[in-house]
Length: 272
Length: 326
Image (tube, rainbow over all chains, first blue to last red; front, side, top):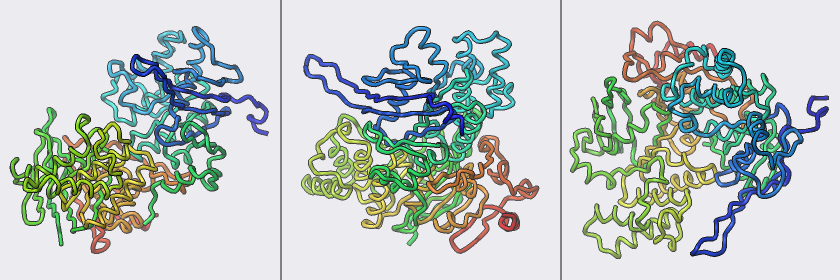
């Protein structure tokens, strides 16, 4: 019996979550129009699992990520962390939630503050959450830099983002996300801006981190092959609705929904 | 018939730190009606080649050496006026961010008409309108969308309109620089099929630039693999992708995730690409190469022929040893 069977409560659970974006009625158009970005989404992600959310642009996959880190609130439905609903939390509870649920963004050229050195970037979450003192924080930053493969950490400590390549910047973003030992990380297309040789090294890193800390991940991507390489289970999302979900290998080998089939068919391969 | 022939081309950018050699002694040629793909990581010089062929290099860049022959004219000593006449008519380009390549305040059809009017002042209004309608048919945009503004189009439709614009003056060569990078897989598939179809119908030549090897493999008959400003391997796509010989091509193919890849694939070790300002060595890949030897420091590698069309930039004995070891 594995850990997950003993402990049936998933780290992250979405129950009937919907999100609508409505335009405010204005002087010229009195009626407001709504776009449904997510429609009745149900997800359960267990400890130590990498869960892939695959879909094309506009399918609602990034919205799902934003709701999970509570950058936005759902229009309907409940989000639970370790079985506790987090819909109405604010103040201290929200701050605690944010330290447990972190995010890695798509564009490493925009998600790092150019005025902050690497150490300042990674130390910030520790200061905000009042963890440790100056000495232990510095130690923690160097340790984390080593974990994400920027070693020796001392050498990168005082550098600035513009001195790093895209792949190294994304490693800094990963370091910033894991420095608080979160339970759940949302990775929103972390490699879509990077070359294939760099992307695969980052995937390897995410796998190592999962193994080392037993963290759970939501991996958002439009690249089915990347999802196959990294994820244990995937969900295919189309127009805000999850059309197919299951173990990654099964979904890709035996796709049932026409949309999944189409995604697999159009995936560029060496067919000549 | 050879349409374009590039010989020993080097292009440099003047920077504050010194001269950056973005393209270093590159030679290739394209036959009429064929497609040639350039693959490589960001910073390897593939876009610089495209810009050189269009005469669109920025002010701080210049051709250091080499010749570009297009039919009978040598493009490397064209002046601005010659370029203006040539560009769009003989060679046209599809740019990287097609979303932003159109003027947002001018209707789509007018943007295409403008290109035709500039190059064919003798054509009448009705002739031009007819031509634009044909172009829209060719790229599968419905006629009633002609008078729309770019923001009314979806990403894929904008890319189609850009392709129509590139075809407007019946160019002999189209340079497509990452034309599908910003699109998702389903739309990408449609656009690639469209480009293949048009290329066959009009017998146009295409230079296709991309970092995605699978996309290049889908579209191009001939392939050049680039690293650090140099072409490291060239050949027919079957040759380059089924029997890669250069160590960099092998790494590139190994790191590509396909739907059939194994979870336990080997992760390639690749160092940072050399700094092209200070780089003086013979082979730009030497620092990351697993078959690099002392010889690579003292001698310049040469073109090793695998077949009449398939060549790798390396030493023959090193390549043979590598093949035996695997």
